[in-house]
Image (cartoon, rainbow, N blue to C red; front, side):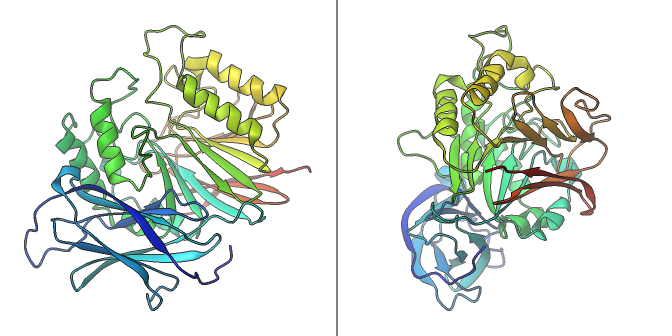
Length: 419
């Protein structure tokens, strides 16, 4: 990834999330740290939270010492969003490394670094981490130290970023959902990682309640807290939409699925009327896969395609098979699904030609056995160790690695890319 200095930056919008009163002069101004997400070739979302309504300044620079700081902008957090704030940076340059910092008055707060995606015509290698499942009962989250050492371009956090329905208390109010996120951000390992690597975040079920579907009464509360506490770009015309995509030059296009908000209730039997994605998101995915001229199409799905329970794609087999047949019939090459959820690692080559790589848990209970092990299309599966996935892509192929909490290699495989 090129590390050339950036020319200029313009902050074009700031989204306010919420705040709480200053507790006094000795309080750390930004106890939940800083995070950067939804990074494209010319934009990025910066997130932080202040403990009060005092003005916050966001600075952007091309050097870690902020000698070239550009476009400082003052933000006033509000209690309506639990004093979280998001700054949407635009007019960034493709393929560049940036540094951002937040300040409160004369006190410098935490800083973060990230890399923008390359321009559409560029062929730049991609280093991507993925994983899921962080349960607060397994803090400290030391696995993020190993992940930080990878120096990856992106991290796909594929759900169960909190366990709102488990742990010390079960969240049922908006304030309790927010409290869960605040507690998780007390983990120093997580904060340091989020300050080092741009994150594309998606929820699964535990951000609301176990195995929830579109009719859950607290869906809106969980969604609001999730959007408040992650650096997610919220479309002005579709404020509830979470599914989105990222283009990484000529090599990759990443489609990140929302497998929760639109899924049919469990009582509906499998068939044409039982959808996980909903008609609009499914059409978006199929059109995007067919239209994309990227060499590799990466699909982030919080749940597995096969060999899992009814809460996964196995319970929505009619829609899953429609998607897989579409890829096969349209001869869409080099499609790989990345998933989490099942608390074990696996690599599957499905008969339709689609690959699937499953990683996790990052920090949660471990599956006693890998459900995909010894199944017809499974190439490798392992349980019993916390782990993360690491994907490297260049013009010759994809290298997939699974590493545990101590950063020991569990498995590695290469997918060649024929031209």
